[in-house]
Image (tube, rainbow, N blue to C red; front, side, top):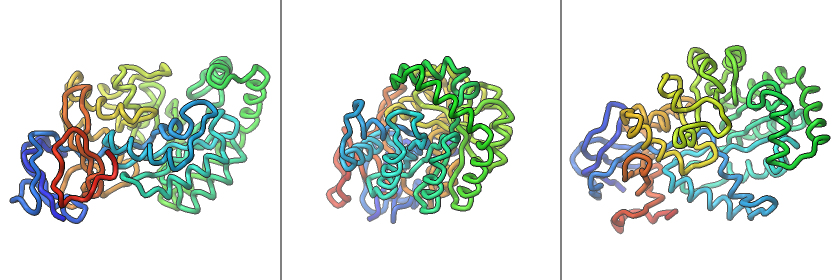
Length: 388
Protein backbone atom coordinates (compact mmCIF):
# COMPACT_ATOMS: atom_id res chain seq x y z
CA UNK A 1 0.00 0.00 0.00
CA UNK A 2 0.96 3.65 -0.22
CA UNK A 3 1.72 5.50 3.01
CA UNK A 4 2.54 9.17 3.59
CA UNK A 5 4.27 10.22 6.80
CA UNK A 6 3.39 13.87 7.44
CA UNK A 7 4.49 16.46 9.98
CA UNK A 8 7.92 14.82 10.25
CA UNK A 9 11.42 16.18 10.73
CA UNK A 10 13.24 14.32 7.98
CA UNK A 11 17.03 13.96 7.88
CA UNK A 12 18.39 13.74 4.35
CA UNK A 13 21.91 14.14 3.00
CA UNK A 14 21.17 17.85 2.55
CA UNK A 15 19.86 18.68 5.99
CA UNK A 16 17.00 18.50 8.45
CA UNK A 17 13.65 19.77 7.24
CA UNK A 18 10.00 19.59 8.22
CA UNK A 19 7.77 17.87 5.69
CA UNK A 20 6.29 14.64 4.36
CA UNK A 21 7.64 11.36 3.04
CA UNK A 22 5.73 8.93 0.84
CA UNK A 23 6.37 5.17 0.87
CA UNK A 24 5.21 2.98 -2.01
CA UNK A 25 6.12 -0.55 -3.12
CA UNK A 26 8.83 -0.79 -0.47
CA UNK A 27 10.63 2.34 -1.63
CA UNK A 28 10.74 6.02 -0.81
CA UNK A 29 8.44 7.37 -3.52
CA UNK A 30 8.63 11.10 -2.84
CA UNK A 31 9.52 13.85 -0.41
CA UNK A 32 7.12 16.73 0.26
CA UNK A 33 4.66 15.58 -2.41
CA UNK A 34 0.87 15.78 -2.00
CA UNK A 35 -0.46 13.16 0.40
CA UNK A 36 -1.11 9.79 -1.24
CA UNK A 37 -2.56 6.66 0.29
CA UNK A 38 -2.82 6.44 4.07
CA UNK A 39 -1.68 9.55 5.94
CA UNK A 40 0.04 9.19 9.33
CA UNK A 41 0.94 12.25 11.42
CA UNK A 42 4.47 11.90 12.83
CA UNK A 43 3.76 14.67 15.37
CA UNK A 44 7.09 16.34 14.68
CA UNK A 45 9.18 13.22 15.33
CA UNK A 46 12.45 12.59 13.50
CA UNK A 47 12.53 10.29 10.47
CA UNK A 48 16.00 8.86 9.85
CA UNK A 49 17.36 6.23 7.47
CA UNK A 50 17.53 2.81 9.08
CA UNK A 51 20.87 2.14 10.77
CA UNK A 52 23.36 -0.20 9.08
CA UNK A 53 25.50 -2.15 11.54
CA UNK A 54 28.63 -3.62 9.94
CA UNK A 55 30.00 -5.29 13.07
CA UNK A 56 27.82 -6.60 15.87
CA UNK A 57 28.59 -9.44 18.29
CA UNK A 58 25.31 -9.37 20.22
CA UNK A 59 24.16 -12.66 18.71
CA UNK A 60 26.72 -14.44 20.91
CA UNK A 61 24.94 -13.36 24.09
CA UNK A 62 21.57 -14.36 22.68
CA UNK A 63 22.92 -17.84 21.96
CA UNK A 64 24.87 -18.16 25.23
CA UNK A 65 23.53 -15.65 27.79
CA UNK A 66 25.63 -17.29 30.52
CA UNK A 67 28.78 -19.42 30.20
CA UNK A 68 27.80 -22.91 29.01
CA UNK A 69 24.09 -22.04 29.09
CA UNK A 70 23.05 -22.33 25.45
CA UNK A 71 19.62 -21.39 24.13
CA UNK A 72 18.02 -23.12 21.11
CA UNK A 73 18.89 -21.29 17.90
CA UNK A 74 15.26 -20.39 17.03
CA UNK A 75 14.96 -18.62 20.39
CA UNK A 76 18.24 -16.74 19.93
CA UNK A 77 17.46 -15.75 16.34
CA UNK A 78 14.01 -14.45 17.22
CA UNK A 79 15.48 -12.45 20.09
CA UNK A 80 18.22 -10.85 17.97
CA UNK A 81 15.71 -10.02 15.24
CA UNK A 82 13.47 -8.17 17.69
CA UNK A 83 16.46 -6.51 19.33
CA UNK A 84 17.73 -5.11 16.02
CA UNK A 85 14.32 -3.72 15.07
CA UNK A 86 13.96 -2.05 18.48
CA UNK A 87 17.44 -0.51 18.15
CA UNK A 88 16.62 0.95 14.75
CA UNK A 89 19.08 -1.34 12.94
CA UNK A 90 17.50 -2.31 9.64
CA UNK A 91 20.57 -4.01 8.12
CA UNK A 92 22.61 -6.08 10.58
CA UNK A 93 25.97 -7.74 9.85
CA UNK A 94 26.42 -10.30 12.63
CA UNK A 95 30.03 -11.04 13.51
CA UNK A 96 30.73 -14.77 13.72
CA UNK A 97 34.28 -15.74 14.68
CA UNK A 98 36.23 -18.57 13.12
CA UNK A 99 39.17 -18.97 15.48
CA UNK A 100 39.62 -22.56 16.63
CA UNK A 101 40.59 -22.60 20.28
CA UNK A 102 41.26 -18.87 20.15
CA UNK A 103 38.25 -17.36 21.85
CA UNK A 104 36.84 -19.99 24.15
CA UNK A 105 33.14 -20.40 23.48
CA UNK A 106 33.44 -19.45 19.80
CA UNK A 107 33.63 -23.05 18.62
CA UNK A 108 34.12 -23.26 14.84
CA UNK A 109 31.63 -26.12 14.35
CA UNK A 110 28.96 -24.10 16.06
CA UNK A 111 30.08 -20.93 14.25
CA UNK A 112 29.40 -22.58 10.90
CA UNK A 113 25.97 -23.75 12.07
CA UNK A 114 25.13 -20.26 13.33
CA UNK A 115 26.33 -18.62 10.11
CA UNK A 116 24.04 -20.81 8.04
CA UNK A 117 21.09 -20.18 10.37
CA UNK A 118 21.55 -16.42 10.20
CA UNK A 119 21.92 -16.52 6.43
CA UNK A 120 18.58 -18.29 6.19
CA UNK A 121 16.78 -16.06 8.69
CA UNK A 122 13.78 -14.27 7.19
CA UNK A 123 13.12 -11.86 10.00
CA UNK A 124 11.89 -8.35 10.55
CA UNK A 125 15.21 -6.79 9.49
CA UNK A 126 17.86 -7.64 6.89
CA UNK A 127 20.30 -10.05 8.56
CA UNK A 128 23.73 -10.69 7.03
CA UNK A 129 26.75 -12.76 8.03
CA UNK A 130 30.05 -11.09 8.87
CA UNK A 131 32.75 -13.77 9.04
CA UNK A 132 35.57 -12.81 11.40
CA UNK A 133 38.50 -15.03 10.46
CA UNK A 134 41.54 -15.47 12.71
CA UNK A 135 44.34 -15.60 10.15
CA UNK A 136 46.52 -17.96 12.20
CA UNK A 137 43.77 -20.62 12.25
CA UNK A 138 44.86 -22.84 9.34
CA UNK A 139 42.07 -25.32 9.96
CA UNK A 140 39.24 -22.85 9.47
CA UNK A 141 40.38 -21.66 6.04
CA UNK A 142 38.44 -24.52 4.41
CA UNK A 143 35.30 -23.61 6.36
CA UNK A 144 35.49 -19.97 5.39
CA UNK A 145 36.19 -20.95 1.78
CA UNK A 146 33.09 -23.15 1.79
CA UNK A 147 30.86 -20.41 3.22
CA UNK A 148 32.13 -17.89 0.67
CA UNK A 149 31.46 -20.28 -2.21
CA UNK A 150 27.94 -20.94 -0.90
CA UNK A 151 27.10 -17.25 -0.63
CA UNK A 152 26.60 -17.34 3.13
CA UNK A 153 29.01 -14.50 3.92
CA UNK A 154 28.35 -10.83 3.15
CA UNK A 155 31.45 -9.43 4.87
CA UNK A 156 34.85 -10.97 5.68
CA UNK A 157 37.25 -9.43 8.18
CA UNK A 158 40.74 -10.60 9.03
CA UNK A 159 41.74 -10.80 12.70
CA UNK A 160 45.21 -11.49 14.05
CA UNK A 161 45.56 -11.79 17.81
CA UNK A 162 49.21 -12.81 17.74
CA UNK A 163 50.96 -10.97 20.61
CA UNK A 164 53.18 -8.12 19.57
CA UNK A 165 50.83 -6.37 17.19
CA UNK A 166 47.24 -5.21 17.04
CA UNK A 167 45.12 -5.53 20.16
CA UNK A 168 47.75 -7.31 22.28
CA UNK A 169 51.05 -5.46 22.56
CA UNK A 170 52.93 -8.39 24.07
CA UNK A 171 52.56 -11.96 25.33
CA UNK A 172 51.79 -10.76 28.84
CA UNK A 173 48.78 -8.73 27.64
CA UNK A 174 47.51 -11.63 25.56
CA UNK A 175 47.99 -14.08 28.42
CA UNK A 176 46.25 -11.81 30.90
CA UNK A 177 43.25 -11.57 28.56
CA UNK A 178 42.94 -15.34 28.09
CA UNK A 179 43.40 -15.95 31.78
CA UNK A 180 40.84 -13.35 32.83
CA UNK A 181 38.13 -14.04 30.23
CA UNK A 182 38.55 -17.75 29.54
CA UNK A 183 40.39 -19.00 32.65
CA UNK A 184 43.16 -20.59 30.61
CA UNK A 185 46.28 -21.83 32.39
CA UNK A 186 49.83 -20.58 31.80
CA UNK A 187 50.72 -23.76 29.87
CA UNK A 188 47.62 -23.46 27.67
CA UNK A 189 48.45 -19.84 26.93
CA UNK A 190 52.09 -20.64 26.10
CA UNK A 191 50.98 -23.43 23.76
CA UNK A 192 48.54 -21.12 22.00
CA UNK A 193 51.16 -18.40 21.50
CA UNK A 194 53.64 -20.91 20.07
CA UNK A 195 51.04 -22.22 17.63
CA UNK A 196 50.18 -18.71 16.45
CA UNK A 197 53.80 -17.76 15.97
CA UNK A 198 54.40 -20.94 13.96
CA UNK A 199 51.66 -19.90 11.52
CA UNK A 200 53.03 -16.40 10.94
CA UNK A 201 54.85 -17.35 7.72
CA UNK A 202 51.61 -18.59 6.11
CA UNK A 203 49.31 -15.73 7.04
CA UNK A 204 49.82 -13.46 4.02
CA UNK A 205 49.22 -16.24 1.49
CA UNK A 206 46.11 -17.37 3.35
CA UNK A 207 44.69 -13.85 3.43
CA UNK A 208 45.46 -13.33 -0.26
CA UNK A 209 43.60 -16.52 -1.24
CA UNK A 210 40.54 -15.72 0.83
CA UNK A 211 40.47 -12.07 -0.24
CA UNK A 212 40.50 -13.06 -3.91
CA UNK A 213 37.65 -15.48 -3.31
CA UNK A 214 35.65 -12.86 -1.39
CA UNK A 215 36.08 -10.30 -4.16
CA UNK A 216 34.90 -12.86 -6.69
CA UNK A 217 31.69 -13.32 -4.70
CA UNK A 218 31.13 -9.58 -4.09
CA UNK A 219 31.83 -9.97 -0.38
CA UNK A 220 33.12 -6.84 1.34
CA UNK A 221 36.55 -7.06 3.01
CA UNK A 222 37.81 -5.51 6.24
CA UNK A 223 40.91 -5.35 8.35
CA UNK A 224 40.43 -5.69 12.11
CA UNK A 225 42.37 -3.84 14.85
CA UNK A 226 44.61 -2.40 12.15
CA UNK A 227 47.86 -0.82 13.29
CA UNK A 228 50.28 1.12 11.11
CA UNK A 229 50.31 2.33 7.52
CA UNK A 230 51.94 -0.89 6.31
CA UNK A 231 49.06 -3.02 7.58
CA UNK A 232 46.51 -0.61 6.11
CA UNK A 233 48.33 -0.64 2.77
CA UNK A 234 48.33 -4.43 2.69
CA UNK A 235 44.59 -4.55 3.39
CA UNK A 236 43.89 -1.97 0.70
CA UNK A 237 45.94 -4.02 -1.78
CA UNK A 238 43.78 -7.05 -0.94
CA UNK A 239 40.69 -5.05 -1.90
CA UNK A 240 39.45 -4.12 1.57
CA UNK A 241 37.00 -1.24 1.86
CA UNK A 242 36.87 -1.14 5.68
CA UNK A 243 39.38 -0.70 8.50
CA UNK A 244 37.78 -1.89 11.74
CA UNK A 245 38.88 -0.24 14.97
CA UNK A 246 42.23 1.29 13.90
CA UNK A 247 44.30 1.34 17.06
CA UNK A 248 45.74 4.84 16.86
CA UNK A 249 45.27 8.16 15.10
CA UNK A 250 48.10 7.60 12.61
CA UNK A 251 46.52 4.33 11.48
CA UNK A 252 43.11 5.98 11.14
CA UNK A 253 44.67 8.70 8.97
CA UNK A 254 46.40 6.03 6.89
CA UNK A 255 43.10 4.21 6.42
CA UNK A 256 41.37 7.35 5.20
CA UNK A 257 44.27 8.17 2.87
CA UNK A 258 44.01 4.65 1.41
CA UNK A 259 40.31 5.16 0.71
CA UNK A 260 39.08 2.79 3.44
CA UNK A 261 36.06 3.47 5.62
CA UNK A 262 37.36 3.53 9.18
CA UNK A 263 34.93 1.82 11.56
CA UNK A 264 34.60 2.58 15.27
CA UNK A 265 32.23 1.41 18.00
CA UNK A 266 29.14 3.36 18.98
CA UNK A 267 29.65 2.26 22.63
CA UNK A 268 33.02 4.04 22.43
CA UNK A 269 31.19 7.25 21.50
CA UNK A 270 28.50 6.78 24.13
CA UNK A 271 30.94 6.00 26.96
CA UNK A 272 33.53 8.52 25.84
CA UNK A 273 36.36 6.01 25.61
CA UNK A 274 37.37 2.58 24.32
CA UNK A 275 36.83 -0.30 26.74
CA UNK A 276 40.22 -1.73 25.67
CA UNK A 277 42.13 1.54 25.92
CA UNK A 278 42.40 1.97 22.12
CA UNK A 279 41.72 5.13 20.13
CA UNK A 280 38.76 7.22 21.30
CA UNK A 281 36.01 7.29 18.68
CA UNK A 282 35.18 10.83 19.75
CA UNK A 283 38.75 11.90 19.04
CA UNK A 284 38.69 10.14 15.66
CA UNK A 285 35.43 11.87 14.74
CA UNK A 286 36.77 15.25 15.82
CA UNK A 287 39.87 14.66 13.67
CA UNK A 288 37.74 13.73 10.66
CA UNK A 289 39.11 10.18 10.39
CA UNK A 290 35.99 8.19 11.35
CA UNK A 291 33.93 6.92 8.42
CA UNK A 292 31.35 4.74 10.19
CA UNK A 293 30.10 3.54 13.56
CA UNK A 294 28.91 0.05 14.49
CA UNK A 295 27.21 -1.53 17.50
CA UNK A 296 30.28 -3.66 18.35
CA UNK A 297 28.85 -5.46 21.40
CA UNK A 298 25.78 -3.28 22.15
CA UNK A 299 23.04 -2.60 19.55
CA UNK A 300 21.25 -0.38 22.04
CA UNK A 301 24.20 2.04 21.97
CA UNK A 302 23.85 3.15 18.37
CA UNK A 303 20.96 5.57 18.56
CA UNK A 304 22.03 7.13 21.90
CA UNK A 305 25.50 7.58 20.42
CA UNK A 306 23.87 9.44 17.54
CA UNK A 307 22.23 11.66 20.15
CA UNK A 308 25.62 12.34 21.74
CA UNK A 309 27.03 13.33 18.35
CA UNK A 310 24.22 15.76 17.58
CA UNK A 311 23.93 16.99 21.15
CA UNK A 312 27.09 17.14 23.25
CA UNK A 313 29.46 17.12 20.26
CA UNK A 314 27.45 19.55 18.14
CA UNK A 315 27.54 17.56 14.89
CA UNK A 316 24.86 18.31 12.30
CA UNK A 317 22.31 15.59 11.62
CA UNK A 318 23.32 14.69 8.05
CA UNK A 319 26.96 14.10 9.00
CA UNK A 320 26.02 12.23 12.18
CA UNK A 321 23.57 9.83 10.52
CA UNK A 322 26.04 9.27 7.68
CA UNK A 323 28.30 7.54 10.23
CA UNK A 324 25.57 4.98 10.95
CA UNK A 325 23.86 4.62 7.59
CA UNK A 326 25.47 6.28 4.55
CA UNK A 327 29.07 5.44 5.45
CA UNK A 328 28.37 1.77 6.23
CA UNK A 329 26.28 1.45 3.06
CA UNK A 330 29.14 2.79 0.97
CA UNK A 331 31.68 0.52 2.68
CA UNK A 332 29.56 -2.60 2.11
CA UNK A 333 28.55 -1.70 -1.44
CA UNK A 334 24.85 -1.25 -0.63
CA UNK A 335 23.65 1.24 -3.24
CA UNK A 336 19.95 0.89 -2.43
CA UNK A 337 19.94 2.24 1.14
CA UNK A 338 21.77 4.40 3.67
CA UNK A 339 20.06 7.74 3.11
CA UNK A 340 16.59 9.16 2.53
CA UNK A 341 15.99 9.85 -1.15
CA UNK A 342 13.34 8.90 -3.73
CA UNK A 343 13.99 5.52 -5.33
CA UNK A 344 15.86 4.02 -2.37
CA UNK A 345 14.60 1.30 -0.04
CA UNK A 346 12.19 2.57 2.57
CA UNK A 347 14.36 1.48 5.52
CA UNK A 348 13.37 4.14 8.03
CA UNK A 349 13.13 4.80 11.74
CA UNK A 350 10.91 7.16 13.70
CA UNK A 351 12.90 8.64 16.57
CA UNK A 352 11.99 10.54 19.73
CA UNK A 353 13.95 12.19 22.53
CA UNK A 354 17.15 14.18 22.66
CA UNK A 355 20.82 13.52 23.32
CA UNK A 356 21.65 10.11 24.75
CA UNK A 357 17.93 9.58 25.41
CA UNK A 358 17.10 9.12 21.71
CA UNK A 359 14.91 6.06 21.17
CA UNK A 360 13.03 4.32 18.38
CA UNK A 361 9.26 4.75 18.14
CA UNK A 362 8.86 2.84 14.86
CA UNK A 363 10.94 0.94 12.34
CA UNK A 364 10.17 0.25 8.68
CA UNK A 365 12.10 -2.22 6.53
CA UNK A 366 11.47 -2.05 2.79
CA UNK A 367 8.34 -0.06 3.53
CA UNK A 368 6.89 -2.52 6.05
CA UNK A 369 6.55 -1.49 9.66
CA UNK A 370 8.30 -4.11 11.80
CA UNK A 371 8.44 -2.36 15.17
CA UNK A 372 6.48 0.19 17.15
CA UNK A 373 6.75 1.42 20.71
CA UNK A 374 5.09 4.30 22.51
CA UNK A 375 3.54 5.72 19.34
CA UNK A 376 -0.05 5.94 18.18
CA UNK A 377 -1.11 2.74 16.40
CA UNK A 378 -0.80 2.66 12.64
CA UNK A 379 -3.97 2.49 10.50
CA UNK A 380 -5.71 -0.85 10.43
CA UNK A 381 -4.85 -1.24 6.74
CA UNK A 382 -1.14 -1.36 7.53
CA UNK A 383 0.56 -4.82 7.73
CA UNK A 384 0.90 -6.18 11.24
CA UNK A 385 4.16 -5.48 13.03
CA UNK A 386 6.57 -8.40 13.24
CA UNK A 387 8.26 -7.20 16.41
CA UNK A 388 7.13 -5.12 19.34
